[in-house]
Image (cartoon, rainbow, N blue to C red; front, side):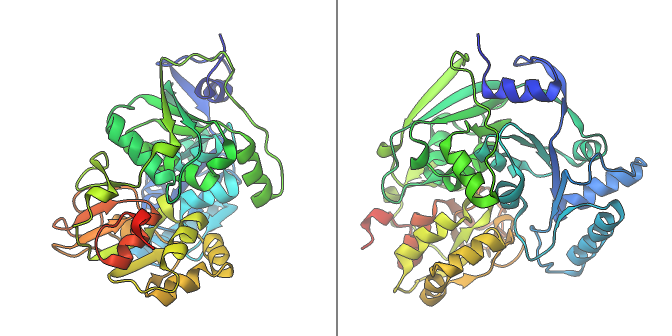
Length: 415
């Protein structure tokens, strides 16, 4: 019997074959943290007398959550992390003007078959390229920074097959919300989701990153797309080399599997206050919205801004709208293609490379009683600011259409 992608990746990292449910020690390929969690990682290292890094080229540090710092404490934390980076000789450090950690991992670092750990739950985003990527707490990440190793329970692989091609205005967020609506937020606990794409180029890496990002909202240990021609294309075009691809064996065994017909999907929205409370956008068109947010590590990529531009170009928004590409590279490409100009001309506030309002940090925090439609990852109470605010989650098409009307809007009805 063959091996699944999960078993192949973790078996390589363990140096021997592994089975679901087994607790094993693993070699880690990349470790990462950002400004909000990095301070705690460094604190653990200092208290434990850990004064080394396992590999200066395999640690990635990025400032993104409170970037640029909106208050003195945030600035103080960034100062302390910069000192750590200089002292330890960290090669892959990205200051305030570069981008969100998870986007940078996809753009620059993650590769098929790697084991990636970071001090943030949305580390799963790197699964878009076929990496086993998992978020861990400060103590575990501190240990991984020093030793390059970790302990893990091998999860049970779950196979998802994406059939056909998505229709107009359908993207990765709709696939993620469909899975959450079908299985709910706790079903995949102790499982790794392996996504097989029937037609690789019909579902680009931008879409895959959104689905993998939301894997943690499904409580999956990891959510990986099986590497294919689209994976190779993305890495070759963005980094200039062809990656080594690792895939499951044809006779690999999965206890559970699910087929999703992409052409049957409609634009979906997660309703307050749970990511798995999912409804069609067309069911919510009487919900008035005070603010729209397009961005975050979930939906801050070029294709998201292309969609928003198509809907908003030559028109004016009717509600506060904030747009934040996930990195400088995504911002620059969107600017060169005219997407940023389209959004600015429509009345959007645009910046780049910060998590900002996603976690209620800054640059658009929700006020008491306000309703926000966001392309970010979470909608529980207090996530984007006031606990009295309501947060709805959608993809960029619903968000842009909503910005135009001031109410949640199915983009299929926008002319």
